[in-house]
Amino acid sequence: MIANDQELQGTQERIAFFYRLLAQMRVTATTPEEYRLFSDSYLAELERMHAEVLTYLKRHVSEPGPTEPA
Image (cartoon, rainbow, N blue to C red; front, side):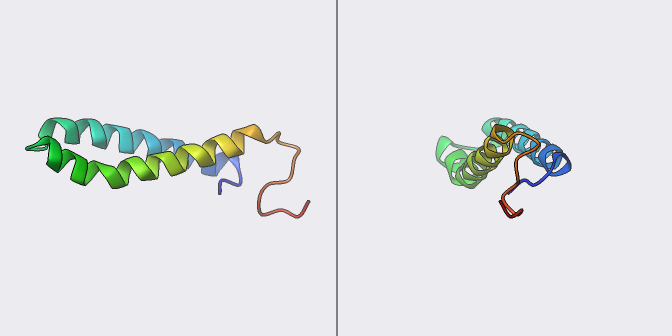
């Protein structure tokens, strides 16, 4: 889980990297099947990271994070 703005920035940078990678794979993959084979895990990781970002951004800065006691 994202605990602070520094981790948020790192996650956002990783998301951007995965998008660029997938865009390149769409062009360089030999077949649609090959693209799906390689892209599925990246797409799943993108979904997971997006969920973490949204969870972090839903919380006001004054609210305790997931690792802090309530």
